[in-house]
Amino acid sequence: TLGINCQTLCLAELIEWEAFEKEFGPLYAEKKGRPGIPIRLLVGLSYLSNAFGLSDQAVVERWVENPYWQFFCGETYFQHQLPIDPSSLSRWRQRIGPEGCERVLAETLKAGVRSGAVKESSFKRVTVDTTVQPKAIRFPTDGRLLNRCRERLVRLAQKMDIPLRQSYARLGPRALKKSSSYAHARQFRRARKTTKKLKTYLGRVYRDVLRKVLPDPDLHAEFHEELLLVEQLLEQKRNDKNKLYSLHAPEVECISKGKAHKKYEFGVKVSVATTNRDNFVVGMQALSGNPYDGHTLQGALEQIMELTGARPERCYVDRGYRGHGVTSTNVFISGQRRNVTPSIRKELRRRSAVEPVIGHMKADGKLGRNWLKGRVGDKINALLCGAGHNIRIILRKLREVLLFFWHYFALGRLRQYEVRLSCYQIAAC
Image (tube, rainbow, N blue to C red; front, side, top):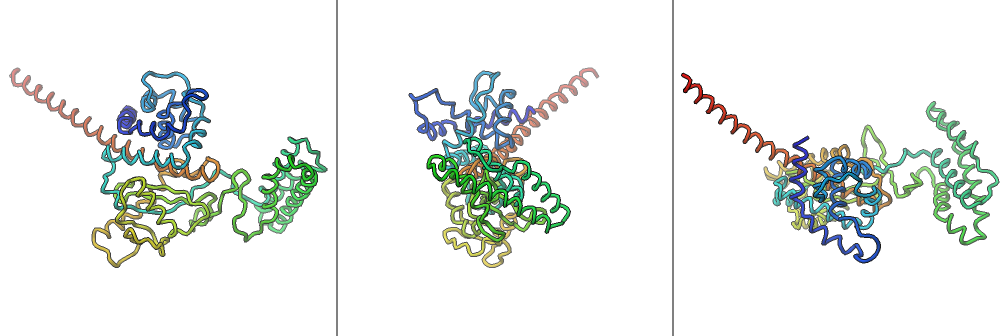
């Protein structure tokens, strides 16, 4: 525990906090409203949250208990109260946007160079791969979506004091339970029949609400977004594209990666770029629309050049990037044998090291389940996950340095003790 705390103290000295003041300061008005929250506090909490995989609520509560985290965030005296409301972190992320999160990620690259965790020459040898960032939604089924959509529409109608002919508050959950039971028992014909009944319930409520809100333009505006979701859900077919999988996150996409344990994942595709030697994250992009991997490589290389200031000379990818069309950087595809020197062959074997990096960001960070809202939330969460991974690597490097000095001084003192002991033995003789 003492080692982890000492690492945090050293890390605070490696980050250039004044750069964030210059970058995010213009986003605040000096003479309007209450004084703004210190920018270093918000950036520090974001680093800690994504480095240790904590929610906004958890990182704020742990900040009160940890004086080293308080020093990392700029405090000079121990504080006994919560520094901010956890929702302030959400509003701050919305204020800086994906561009500000790229600045947060770029500072971890500079801190990594200062700490020795990564070398500047490593930025010219990169590995690029894609993964899926799952959204925080339940596994979508037709029956559950239809029943949930009906409940939302009925609740909104009750809020606006619109009387309905029938709400199906009793029949809807009963039909959903039957549909799930039939599907579990592999009685699919009965399950489809019960799901069709749920669709009928939703259609009746939808037409009833539509008849009563169309004459009033203001009332129709209140129901506009909800009615669009209902229409999309009622019209979509089995083999349609751009289907609706979640009502509170309509941007969710169904992505098939060919995994044996998880055939489909619901979220957004993310491009991950790391250094080939040090596994340091130098680029993260959330790519909506499930694009082909080869078409995303040019954008990933441009982001690397923007964040690091150096154009990658060699890029290593898997076979999903065939047909990428990139000419500014030498791209080597897994399994390639032509124009491969022994050093390139060695670096090409290290291409697969990006897979455990993705696994760590999903297991130790927040890439495994995204709780942020919308497509902007997808981009922000991906960038902050990359920053959190870099922070973990820097902390590990600092731990190694501290352990080296601790052993050096401990062994030095032990040798001095042995010399003194031998002198005492000689004098006694």
